[in-house]
Length: 427
View 1 (cartoon, rainbow, N blue to C red):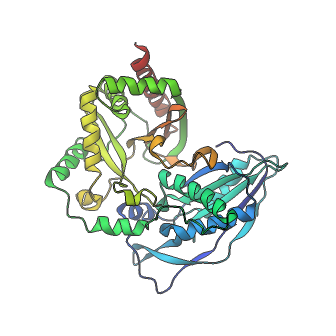
View 2 (cartoon, helix red, strand yellow):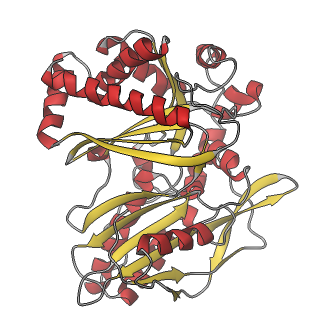
View 3 (cartoon, helix red, strand yellow):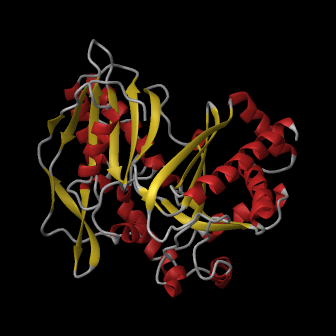
């Protein structure tokens, strides 16, 4: 994350669970996440600047209204009798907290310490709005962060959009959020999901086949990572694969082959997995559950894990594998993974995510300079994100810092980068 030097403040809105509130439904992914206990580094954040300047008090009032609008931000977690619970909370008056940011320190390091301390799974609340103010009349950078239990990347964009809308409403003396779509509470989504019938037998069978191919584990990276029996410091490798014009060319190549861009990318990775690892491409494959329009403006953890297996590198076959992966992630995971004791903890786990921001609710008319921010963590697996946006296609990879992973993951990424480029340039 790039941030200017300057003053760092955060808005503290204290919260405490309502003593008589009935526990709400905890989703499978929330339960798994909270089951790992309270810790730092489990947050997600977005930073941006407003296109129309706003004073800190205006931003604070708007954020308070945003918190009231989205149900999950008004809840806190606890553990009772070994069970994770989530309950509605009562909020106090907000106040700005100053965080010393001397010129000798990067503001992003100061901010990371704030978010590590405040956006923890069991904090009350586990979300925080921050400002980085460079002074001299320059607009501040706004940072919205939350423990992952309450948000996904889509949610962060909704929060940024809603904050800007609330500021505009306040200035126009209009009802705050009156022009925004209805936002349902994430706990309602979790409750609805819990009442769905069990997944069809073929879904359970396909999950079992993919997990059993890895010895009853979630898919692992096909090349050795060295000793990852314990989590290691992370290495983050970011590569710009295509610019905007080249991304259009990539979409054109995919369309000519009758598939979407994601399937063409999976085709490249499948070929590399077969050549370098001697096995099909198998990976954890995050998918979203915002299938109905009523959830498009809701904030919550709507991303769940599926698995994908591609043994045929043809784009058409990979398109079928993507479709299957979406289907595998469209059913409650608790019953599916119960035979494995829940999601199997797998050192070396390999995950691939594809995010097309053109499908997300970006309020380009109200916010600018958007950055997606993640915590610095320790890891024992390999996670690849493909991010397609207005500037092109970008690849971000996080992997453990071992000599073997440095060598093998780097070679893998080199091959993926070159293979993607070959689709539009030719070998």
